[in-house]
Amino acid sequence: MEPIETHLEKVRRLLGGQEAPLIDGQRHILGQCPGCGRIWLQRGTTQVLHLTAAGIETWARQLHADLARLPRRACRACQIRLVGGEFALDEYVDAPSGAITGYGMSWERGTPPQHLLFSAVLRSWLERQPAVPEPSVVTNAALAETVLRRLVHRPPPLHFQPFEDVIRTLLTRENTPGAHAPGTDNWTWHGGLWIAHSPELGGDVMISLAQALPSHVRFSLDAALTLWRQILSHALSFGIEGA
Ligand SMILES: [Zn+2]
Image (cartoon, rainbow, N blue to C red; front, side):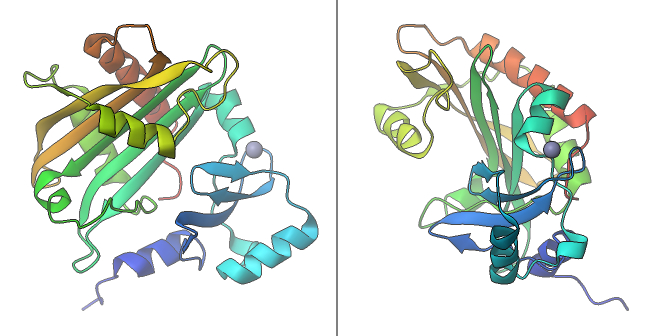
């Protein structure tokens, strides 16, 4: 019988030996872009694109990365060329069992500026977490795609709960609304939460959709959902990298 691969072993295999450690609370991955060949560092939600040869060596040693088999990850410049913005997808995992419990997604573009955050995480698992769970890399691309495609095609939620101010403040602390794109200085986070069923994840998921908009603009859930569907369909048509 084949031994069952743990989640960490899967991450290590997909990343060519790296474990994507959290350093100062941010996940670090050294990758190579299939578009331009550049070797770059993922540091949390930011990309370090201009590494010197010595910098690459240092990070490779620190992250146990084999430079001959780096994971293929599209850099920001190539993502903008291919899909018109930066799309990032993460996976949430229950550490003791290794079960996949949800996904987080972000989308940023500069012109015209767009910035969205979306997550769908098993409610029962989320409620057991003592702190905000840390996402990991996607280890099952087929599952991610099935879950997200199903959630995309669901009708708008009946019970939508707008974010309370404390959530909006937390979001702003973690992510600058508009991601510093020109003209987004007065943007704030809008959005809210709802529950949907995800048979593939095996339960109800808590969905969070956040959209960065000028502070005076009234948030429209329909418009945000439509935009999110377009972005997701477009991004999925290029495939989920890394898995
Ligand atoms: Zn590139």
